[in-house]
Image (cartoon, rainbow, N blue to C red):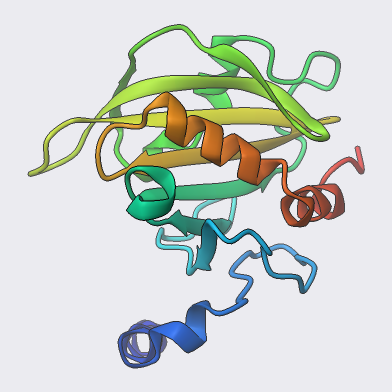
Length: 188
């Protein structure tokens, strides 16, 4: 397994554009459609596999989003309250994916309601401490479609600001992401 990872990593260094172009890196059966969004390009999932598997990773360049932003998106089947979805900050804290970045984080402010097509939930800004790096503000977006959580984590080169949050939410409203979410959720 280690050898396979080294080979994949080596190929990613040699052929990055061919690996990123239209590749679905999700462990889920994502539809074979690219994002169609000129601001966002899909990248390979950068995190180790955990109990939720891999997700989808996207990048928006600084000239498009004001600061380079990476958006990590994945579905957590059956992992939210069916009756209320993600309706409070405790639910963001419970289902969010900040631990992918660091285990050392704290909220900067109360969350607020967000909607992205068929998904509704909340977004909340966190201060995240990382080894050998300055603390940074990272946005955790936790939404639901029926009984399933859809978790997005926005990480910017500089702290995530409202402009980057707007860009991320607009991307989550795109037809390609809505179709992907619909295909992955709502069976419960």
